[in-house]
Image (cartoon, rainbow, N blue to C red; front, side, top):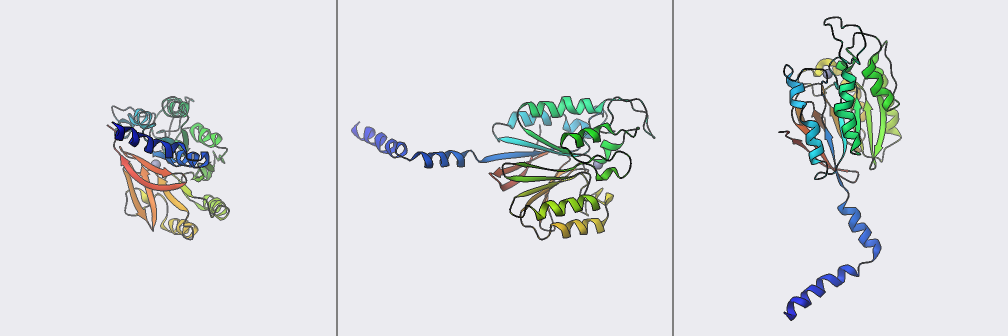
Length: 284
Ligand SMILES: [Zn+2]
């Protein structure tokens, strides 16, 4: 009995005697883990009965809400093709197919609002499908750009739209819109040169790895120029894409390349501003 009491006292007293500054540091360390979820190519507007990609994305919202506390999810990144035609209920039709749906409202009510209501940050960039509307208004593209005060080019060279930066937990997130074309590359170079000591995550829609399907939507020479722009920086901790409907974590020319366009979400585990790992997260 005496031994038990002594043991209790010996383990309790030293902890209580810890100075407040160390206790605060211990708490800060235990609270520094957090997660980013990557889920792209949501294709709102498609009928889940007919569209495989819309069907496999149906449970992603519920899954994010379910794991948000256990994995301390603080951010979701959706890298383009958030809607299938970029419409917002306006009259008109696509060149190849009549469509009068309101995909923007679906995107807002079934993705943006429920995620942001929980306090989770949501970063999005446009994909090619978000610009397929039959009118020149490009309401989804406009919405995505206005949300983050990004440039919006509805008439010509729409691919220059949607670039912006966002900082969270000491990490700088850089959206390059559809892909790192010439004007977006100029923007990237400027941002990187001013943030050499800051951990950076870059995201854009088109996939990059040349052996993958659909990676030829931008030229090899443009990929070389992108690589040249980032090659000298060891603070780029991940690059995120969509466009291909397969989720993966791979390497591209030494950089961690993440795609969340498929049935699996990708969960990036962070410790403060440090990248720990990126893992595929199956969605039942
Ligand atoms: Zn696409």
